[in-house]
Image (cartoon, rainbow, N blue to C red; front, side, top):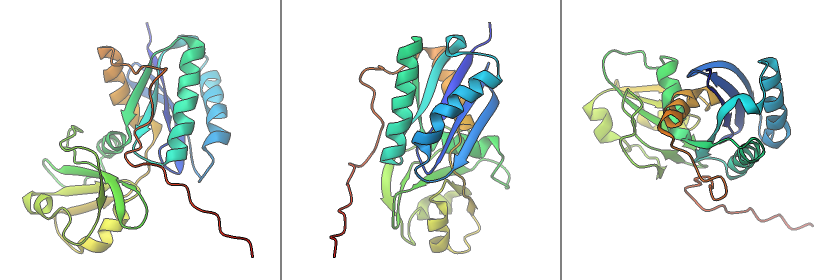
Length: 232
């Protein structure tokens, strides 16, 4: 029996919905436009199911990006995923956004060197700060997720030890600081729902599901609302 997983990714300005069938992505809809999440994700879900001739009843689970990332984007994605799971009686799977970016780097062969390498995905967190963690060339997480302020000495030990691929929408920040280090490789990219495929399939097989009622995104940092400017 075919196993379908609906994949929803909304952690940055980009947002996307993909459909995995037996661990392979068969369709994806994607847009990179700030604040578009709430207006497009519902339609993407409806269209991608209809275009592939299935309904939520045919899906084995719904997977959603859990963060870190945009507060608003994560709220939208998780809310929609929860609603789909409640309505169809399907389990909810979460995927770390940084792990998704690392998997995309592997899937898309973004590292152009040879042998093993380190993957450091970065999500822009304003100014010179990024959300990040270290992964090996198999996509296995090596360090905890953290909010890191970048400077010219960041990742000196990692770069001295061997090649490092910096990726994600925050990678350009570090490229300006690191200079022409021969061990530093850069491939900026936004997360895509299809990068969740391997993570979600593995969790489905293991029965690693979230509690739909209590699951919340992993924001890493508290949300701080901006103060409106006073009217003149």
